[in-house]
Image (cartoon, rainbow, N blue to C red; front, side):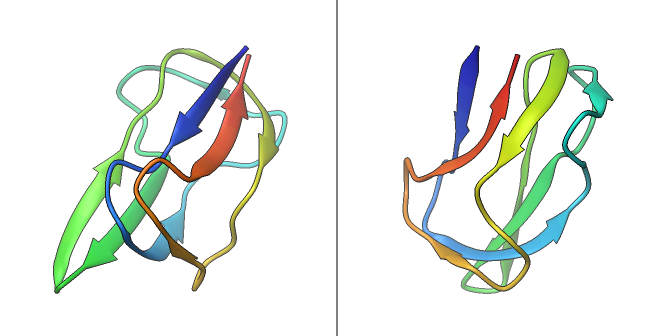
Length: 69
């Protein structure tokens, strides 16, 4: 089990996965915007077990976004 964290502070713009979804290393899971720059968050292959944020949430660097198993 791995906890996926935010690499930067910003606002969650997109969530492109759902709980129970199988992902690959190339899947764009989240988009976080900071100062008009978008940061795409990728994860390791696995299954999304839990999502901790919703669109519009503000996150800080290292805040948990999701659990991938």
